[in-house]
Every structure is written in structure tokens, then in C-alpha cells.
Length: 328
Image 1 (cartoon, rainbow, N blue to C red):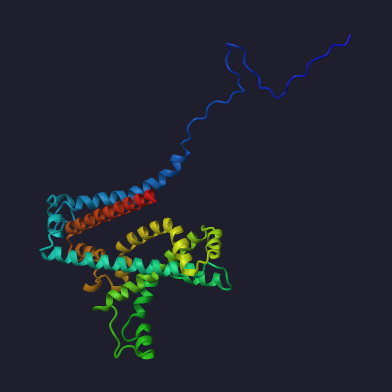
Image 2: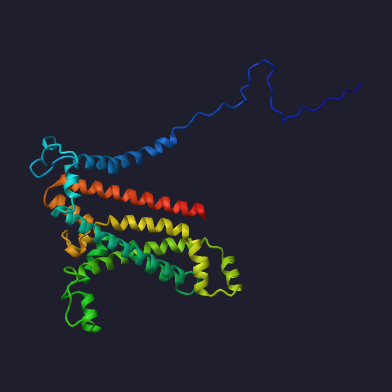
């Protein structure tokens, strides 16, 4: 007599008996891996060594009378508390007046540099948005100033601004006859203009790169719809391009502001460490107060005050932009 057997379901897992322990087939819960923390450890150590520790040391130095008489042994420097801050922030004194002058020069320099860099970068990115023959070559040429090392670019400009042998005076005076005599560019009133030209030349390719990347994320349907409604180039730019680039511009302006306000390499290389009064940025002023007069206590106080100012401006900027974004 034949008997029928039910085939065993091979896909069903083995279940433990009621009240028994689970079988070995059940996977254990994986432990938390330490690999992410190990990978982050070198970056954290370098961040502490390069930024956090020097910042704390600078804050401590600002509380000491650290001059050339105590530079060899910091432990002998007298503790003066907030006296250095009182001296450098007393704008009625000579030191405070010089610091205030450098601050306003830096503000004017930052506003002009950031504004011109953003304007040139946006203009170039919008004009190169549509494909045409040679667009890749122009993009590469526009990004060249950003790719060059800072010292190489600024030293080249210092040669171009030379009064007798520089290319700038050769073009403006000998070729175009715009001036009666060759002007000085690295001293006097023209030093601010020369510094601004070099800063914009170095910064605008970064703005161009960010705006160009932001334009790639704008849907083409918006431009087609605006064109069908009869919107011209300027109308599309004002109603489509700029509103869609708002998130990019918020970050771009903040980054350019911080970079430009703290800029030290450009004026230091261009003027050789002693900038003229018309181009005396606050970074150069702090350097001269610290390493030229050997008054590291006052220089550290200026640096800490500058750091606090930038933190307040950055926090206020982020607060205002986030509030406007929420309202929108």
C-alpha cells in the first residue's frame, strides 16, 4: 500500500522548541563598531593641534604682559588680565586709533572685494551657462587664478605694479596715455586700489565656480515656461536665476567675507610685510604689532577681539538668513 508524504518546506527556518533556547542560525546583534571613531581620530587630533590649542594659547597670551623682555620665558610674564584689551580698544589713544583705522580699511576692502568678486563670478557663470564652441576653454581660463598658488600669483602682480618696469604702467601710460606720468601703485593712495585688484582677481573664480555649479541645478523647464510667458533675459535673470541661486549665494557670500576679512597672504606678499596706511588691513596691523614691536600681549588681544567680532557677525548673518528662509 502506497503512502503519501508531504514534502518538507526547505525555505522555512528551523524554529526552536517552545521554551528552548534559540538555535545557532539566529544572528547575534552586531556590536557597535569603533572603525568610524578610529577614522575620525587623526582629523580630530590635527584640528586640536592646529586650531584649538593655538587659539587657547593666544587667548592666554592676551592676558599677559608678554613683551620682548619676557618672550624667552613666558612663565615670568606678569598677568595683567584685561588690561591689553583696554589699551587696544581705547580708540582715544594712539594704539586704539590705529586699530580703528585698520578696521575701517578692512571693512571697505572686504565689502568692495566680495561685491566685485560676486558680480564678476555671477556674470561669467550666467554668460557661460548655455553650451557653445570654446566654452570649456573659457571655463579653464577663468579658473586659472584660483588654481595658482597664492605667493606665485601675488608676486607676479607685484612685478606688474612696479612703477618703472611694470606692465600696468606700460599699458596705461605708454600705450593708452591715460596718465601724464607713471603712478606709484604699491605706495600711497593707489596701494588700496592695487590690493583690491589682486584680491578680486584671486577671489572671483571661486565665486564663478560656485555659481556655475548652482546653475546646473536649476531646471530648464523654468526658463522655458518664463520664455513662453514672454520674459526676456533680464526678467528671467531677476525672477528665475537669482531666486534659485539664493541658497548658493548665502553660503558663498559668507565664505568670501571670512576669507577676505582675514586675508593676510595677499597684503603681506604684495607690500612686503609693511603695508601703507591706505592699505593697512587689520591682519597686517596685528602682525606688525606683534612681530615688529614684540608686544605679543597686545597683538593677541587684537586677534581675540577680531575672532569675537567675526563670530558675532557670522552668527548674526546666519540668524537673519535662516529667519528670512523660514518666513519665505
